[in-house]
Amino acid sequence: MELADYCRRTGLFVEQVKEWRAISIQAHEKKLTENIRTDRALRDAKNKLRELEKELKRKDKALAEAAALLILREKFNALW
Image 1 (cartoon, helix red, strand yellow):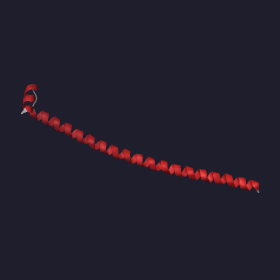
Image 2 (cartoon, rainbow, N blue to C red):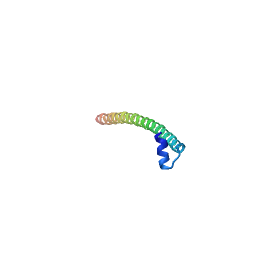
Image 3 (cartoon, rainbow, N blue to C red):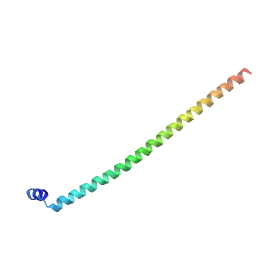
Image 4 (spheres, helix red, strand yellow):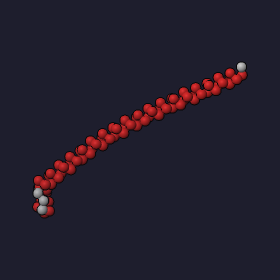
């Protein structure tokens, strides 16, 4: 009843308001779906970044160890 009264006062049709409401709800649901998809992609990207950072740290440690061993071998060879 309130909708019909409002429409009469503003010069609108009830069907128009219902259609606008349906369009608004549909757009909102579409936006929610897009946000969920975007959130999922962002979470996946963050996980991938974390994995790559771990791998980089591991490789940096291995490189530092190899460099230290190389220096020690050069010093050992220089002594003999």
